[in-house]
Length: 266
Image (tube, rainbow, N blue to C red):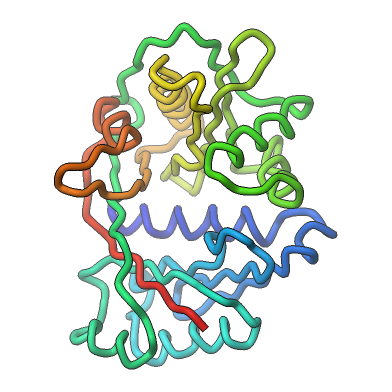
């Protein structure tokens, strides 16, 4: 399941960025390349430095120093200030830490990849309305997700909102009356469904929004014929707390492995 998880994440990141409408894509300076079985994505004008990342490597083809150099060459070519390389630890070549140091890569905070059977996901209780996002709510939904993650509205709104109604995507929201207060997305990649873009406004946390959104997306995954559901979130410190991780585990997803973020800066 772990390898399908990597490929699903690479697929939805590629779809988010390369399939967003122009001229938003042009203004953000988006470019993508399929390299060595993985994908490298550049968003030159991303103020958050989040969307330039390379992932999905080592599953279809070995991840070699030559592949790494091609990825870094892609980012230099496009003038990216910072990018993140994400690879399953067991798929890294021997001596990767030393190799990374010679290329200017630094180990960042690890993420945890989780997975499970969508049919076995348990639903949490929420007093909020949980439902799919329609075209009329697409922009409001996208802005709630971006605001919660501290990302600017505008072209990124266009990127997220354009997934509403697009093949492979199942966006959901939680409403308080007619106001969207939480959002999340689901991407269908064959028999694997990938949870992503989960966010709740601070004013409505603790009301079960994300538990409800996990359950709703798991039901959509089952309906789409998926056999696996996967997600990723940041690993908290030993004395830290990550509500997203707890919500996922409470719903029935189990940690598969930890994955380091390798940060490259121009």
